Amino acid sequence: MNISEKIEQIRLAPTSVRLRYVWGGVIVSMLFIFTIWLFSMSLLFKGNKNSLNEAPSIPSIKEQFSTIKEQVPSINNLESKPDSSNKKNEAESIQSIAQ
Image (cartoon, rainbow, N blue to C red):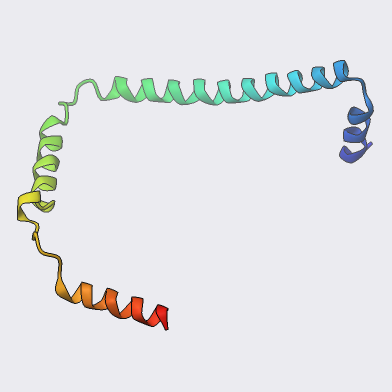
């Protein structure tokens, strides 16, 4: 029996039987997801045991924050007047669309 025949057999079955298949599928899927989650959590905790002796990377975070502050312009530094060439380009594109 191939998969398409099995699907057709399940479609013809009463609702109670189809619900059993649905809940069986849900249980199998959740067990698979739970197993992956447990495996990833165990790897996460193993990684934390190895890094307990290391100093926290807070200075690194502070350095990154100061670098970001330097790279991002302040609102006060932005020009209050929009670029006139942009207005000219917008006007030209609107005129070309209108034609």
